[in-house]
Image (tube, rainbow, N blue to C red; front, side, top):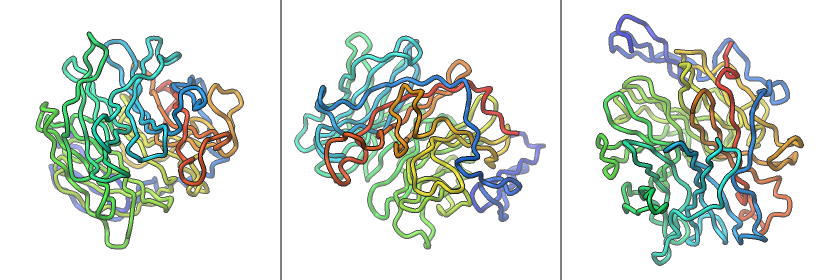
Length: 396
């Protein structure tokens, strides 16, 4: 951050004005105060977006019901995708981590192969995040025993000669489940966002010891007293030593936020913002244009509904979101993904590559023809991909 420039950084209900390292708190919104959050029917739909299906929901062929938590990464000229899968119900010990890859920019995909099928007794390994660093492809996955007990993070490194994943064991304990790909901070450490399952389920981050990706410190973000129980699945945006965390509240469709000004070591309490957001995992980051983005289902009237899938953007150099675009609606007959008025488009991830933003997401197809009943059917998904030209994401 340039020391001679005063940069107003608005996030949630606190405005941090930075000049020569001095940070003062004032009241301000996460969404730009001079623009109303549009209703879903008033949102512009992005043009020139290319869609493809990474893995279809087809339990009659492969036996898998649950699929969730798409992650993406370019490595060695190939595009990798991963997700959690289960032949049984979600978040049970038969969960497995799988991956597939594309050699044609995400248009077609290989059949999924295992990252970890959890051969240890009563261990489930689910969805995670990728990192390509120093010529190696890493992945970090949420894992648990039984039904969401002893939640922790496990690391794996890809053996390209064998096309298999080498397990590196536990790297973060105490309930941490990674949800955002590691981002390198200006101090040389990596930070990955997630949730700490248990003790109120607050948002949390894990911070590496430099480039040692087997050593991570868990930092749990405190919750404002008024929040009660949350389900703090979270994403982060970086601006120098300042890190902003955007989190799911839980069952309330409103984004939470917290701010650190010391590379994620200490945080303000996570509290409500003025931005409506569906009850789903958010994805956030920074484009090469200098714009920050937030992907989820965001509109004035969307409530908890996980559609349409949207992306909110800032102007370059600003941190208040001021424009929202539809990536795709639930009813999407032009395809190729599943189309249904009640389709849930959820748990997005995103990476920028070669002038395009690649967005992976889950699609439950409106639960039409899904195996199971009750809660078990919620996240029996297809995995899909949207590829967006960066020039489409201009905030006026």
